[in-house]
Image (cartoon, rainbow, N blue to C red; front, side, top):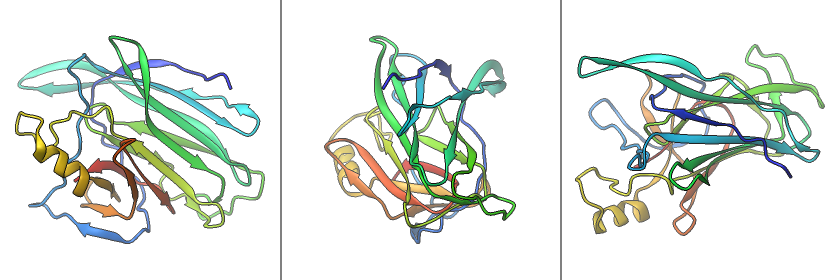
Length: 234
């Protein structure tokens, strides 16, 4: 399948809120105990992403809408971009969106996210989604931390054919605990503590959810019942 791919450099942490996932949380983080989100390895320069969408019929149309914002850091303001990609999910037909991160030195793409949907059952306003109807899904990627926000907030999915989210963390900075070195402590964190977390909205605490994990392929994955913000964290 030919992949629709557009490269957009980004460098701003997003602040998008969305609806909670109903998966039972494993741990609740309060104001004094925030999770440690993995951060992108930016040693090669700004993080760049490429997106594609597909389904049984092949490649799907993909609408990307970057927004230029301003952010102040240390008294300085710089022009930055956020990254959004949208596609149409259809009830009764499994469709997916892939977002890869790009090594800007080699222009090689590596997987970051796959969102796969087949059973959207209810719009945020409570209206049922009929078999064969479509709904526009939007993904916002945080270019500082390994975080994604999924919209529309309030959409619900059925359980007959679960919606799944997989996040790869191979592009993260290997210094997971932020002590300035990559060592056995980081390996222990990856093996024993790393997981998938969600945030109901920007004021809510982050919570860990049940997920599967591959240390060899460096991904975490979970089934979703709702949309929210998701992060690879410990």
